[in-house]
Length: 147
Image (cartoon, rainbow, N blue to C red; front, side):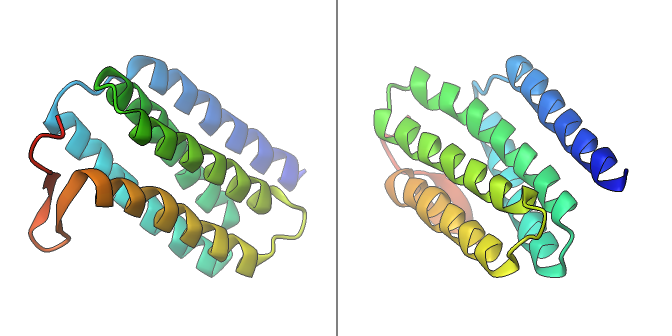
């Protein structure tokens, strides 16, 4: 019964996320910045949840990342940046793979941590390398000429 309730709650979060994406459109740099901050928080919370074995909490954070990545796809599509859209599609694939690991009857914590690391390294870092400058201390901003 507990598993059924957890799966139902996770599906509800994903569904609400999909509804939210339909209503979310990033049009300004300020909105983009808010989504990036949300991604950083969700990614950190997901990693912490995986480390502590709170896999349902990690899945909730993945739903936030999925929603944000879908909104970001729209932003980069409008900017005609196919490489950024490709990075985000790869990120969504990695989110799905991590979600599958976290949905297993017995979660392989090491595999989940590795998949989370790949998500951040191959998606977030790749996009930042192409389009952003700055760091956690000074803040990130778009490189000149990107938008």
